[in-house]
Every structure is written in C-alpha cells, then in structure tokens.
Image (cartoon, rainbow, N blue to C red; front, side, top):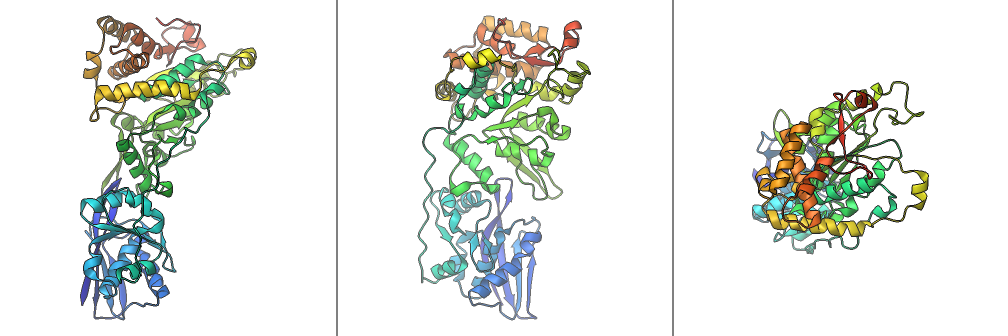
Length: 524
C-alpha cells in the first residue's frame, strides 16, 4: 500500500481554498474510487485521467485506487482537479518522485490525449501557492498568468508527457514570463463625436472624475447610449492594486485573455433580459455576475426599467457595500463589486412623453407607471440624474466639434490624482467612496449653509445628502479647489432637481425623478 499527496485549490469567490489530493494504491479488486464531495465535473475526471495515462502507454495498476480530496466537507467543483489527481496517481505508482511532487500545487484539465487545457482561477491559485511556499503546475497557455504571482516556481506544461519528462530529468520546462502590460493610447469612441449636449457631457465628466453613479433620461435616439459608450475613454488606468483585484475576478471567471492583467477599467453592458444570477452572481457554481466583472469599472444598464425587478433590487446592497454575497447551503461566497452604475431609460414605455403629437394616448399615466418600475431606494443611490433631450437638426449639422476624449481625460486624471493625494493609498479609491466626516472638514461655511437649506427643502435622505456632498467634492477637484464652495454644492444639487411630468406640472405634489438643468437654465 502506498499514499501520495499533492496540493491544489478550490475557490470561494476569488479566495483559493487549499485542497490536498491524496491517492492510495492498495491491494484489492481493481477499482478507481473518488471521494471528498466532488461534483459531476470532478467525478468524471476518473475517465479523463485514465485516458490520458493510456495515451502515455501507462495503465492503472490492477489494484484498488482510492482518491480523496481533503477536506471532505468542502464541495469540489470544476475540471481543474484532473491534473493534480493524475500527478498524485503517478507519484503513488512511483513514476514521479513523491517528495518532489509534494512541493507543488497543480491545476489543469486533461484532454483524452494528455494535453493540459486551460482552466479558470490560475492567478489566485498561484498567489495561494506562493503564500504556502509551493510551486505551481499549470497549463502552458496560462504560465504567464501564473508568473504574475512573483517569486514562485511555475511549471507550465503543454501535456502530461512533457511534465512527466521534467520530473524524471529528461526534459526541462523553461519558466514562463509574465506577458507585457497593455500600453498605448486609449481605444474607444471619442467624445467630440457628440454634438451639443453640453450638460450631459458635463455630467459624464463629473461621473468619470469621481466614480459616481449616473442616470440618463431621454427619448429614443437622444444620445444616451452614445454618451455612455464614451465614458471608458475618460477613465484613468487602474492602479496596480486595483488591476490585481480586477484580474483575480476575471481569472476566476475564466476571462483573463492571454494571461494579461486588466489595466483598464472594465465596461460591462448586459442586456435587459439578464437574470438576477447573471447580474449579481450565482448559479449552480456561484460564478461572478456582471457587477463583479465590472469591479473598479463601469456597469452600463440600458433600458433600465426593462430589467427584471428582482435583479434591479438586488443591486441595492452591492452599490452601498462594494461586494456581493451569494448564499448557498454549504457556504457563503463573496465577490468584490465596487462598480460605477451608468443607467439609461426612456421617460415612458413609448419613449415620447411630453412631445406633442408623438406621445401615446395613455400619457402622462404611462410615464408614471413606467418610472414606478424603479424603486425609490434604487433611485436614491444614483448620484447624478440628467435629462438628455434630442438635438435639433440645424444644431446637429452646424455645431462645432467639441472637446476630445483625450482633453477631458486629462482633467479627469488630474481630479483623480488630487483624490489619491487627499485620501492616501489606504483611503477610498475615489470621491464616490469618501466618508462623510472627511467631506464635512472640507466644506466652506456658506456651502454648508446652502447644503442644509437645500436638503430640507428638497427632502433629501441622509444617503442623498452624503452623495450630493461627494459630487460637490468632485466638482471642486475638477475646478482645482481645495475646499467645497457654494457653487460646487449648487451644481451638485442641480443634478438632483426634480423631474416633473406634465401631470406633475399641474400638481406640484406629484413629483418623480430628478434631473440636471438644461443649458438654458441657471444653477440656483
């Protein structure tokens, strides 16, 4: 009887959970038994391992082979257990040195001919192996991804035969190198393509500078999606710590292309038919959802009221805490979800509320019913709300080209630099996360008086009060001011003014959403 051991990992969110693969080859009737709470994909690894060894000219010994995945009370999911099971079995058969194999963690999927195929989670597994003082065996296509873990020995093998030759000293696997970081100009549509819409472009700039949530309301074709598509080009590159956070999420999701770290803020735009598990995470294996894939980036929700109501309401807690927790019977899985929500919607179902000759016969009732699909707590979490109106044809054709994305991005970068200098490396990443105590210290007396008066008259909640101050702090940063002045607060309050329907104009008590002033209106 002989026992061999090799380490691997399961995943709880982006955190690697150590798992020890134990293989015992003992006398008895020929059998290949796999225990340790495996799921269907892990249980099927027996046949893949058997076929891969057959491709090497090896066969299982005519004995009782028992594979245990310890600890046995943790559910093992995924095909990445193929490679550690095969290595531990080869060590138990004395084909691979046991002591040498025990110094590595392994993960990878085996094809029937022994090729090691890419799997999800190599980057967090490499970090977990480095923390435990182990090397890592992984697919050759993901060796560069594992090399980002730093000082760790990585064996990136194309197939099980090359790996076997390396352990036997016949062939040497060269250590992989991390792929180069993406460099060069930012790619994306330019803001200068947008004619007019100066108020909307100002709101986009403020949202980008402070990481604030933004809601755009307007009829079809007014330019809401066009504006949202130009937001990513305004955002600065991720810091090294942010890039690592985002890359860990994408690695667990199997979306880290070419092993390159994600250095640009992600931009996710799910369709409005997306379910709640697709949006916030979940499913049979508790995979990350769109809000986690948009971590440290932008989540664009077009046709906002058309999303399922439970999916929208599930956004409320992650928008406050920056993380989402998926509850299961056996465990609770948490994913980071610090995203910037950009939403767009029509004023009503037909889209032409308030336009004479184009609105439907149910106006203004249709607008009220449509907006009631969004709850008050959800709307309260939107920092800026603007009304995007169509541009007249004469202005559309004659308007001069506006500022380019590069010009606006420089102002956004300067504002973000000021925020990092103010909050420090251990503080919030942007003004959207700034605590109220720090904001009040930077508030001028006349600005504080205006904020108190406006909050009382507009009936702002405590959350809306804090979020308005955060927007005012960003406006001050764009202006290069150290203190939050009265005009900064006034502009931030303008983005929370009430949006009235035609019925609300007749009855001031009937108020629904908020908007920013148009170009012809004055900021109070």
